[in-house]
Amino acid sequence: MNVVTRFAPSPTGYLHIGGARTAIFNYLFAKKHSGKYLVRIEDTDKKRSSEEAIKAIHKGLNWLNVNSEHKVVYQSQNFNSHIKVAHELLKKGHAYKCYLNSEELEKLRKKSRENGIPIKSPWRNKKELDVNKKRICYTFKNAI
Image (spheres, rainbow, N blue to C red):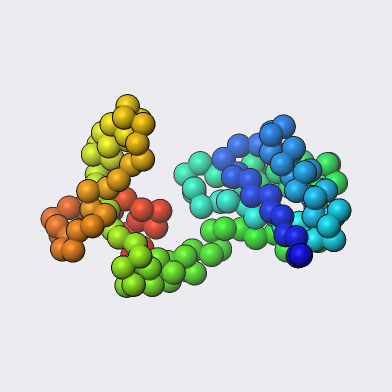
């Protein structure tokens, strides 16, 4: 069995005790099983991510001595790959574009919470899309 663990902090804040705990457990588990421990920085939220937080995370991991022997991956560097896969999923019919605006999405979230059911976009099973809708609700907005 090949063990691979990963610590994937979001640099929207500093390394905290919960993140440190996860990093330590993943590191030790990988080492115990002669596996790999990887670090992947989830820096795709450009509005909230900061270089200062990235540096603090690295500094904290160094202080804890839970550094990966492998290259640190920055998720934002994989955007092109993600966009390619998203296009493939759309083409195969395994994904869809959702055209809800922010207000519509928030109403749907609220209703879902109140009823204890998962969010289901009304665009999920549409064959023809309403091209008059402007906002696309997915991670890679305007990239697809």
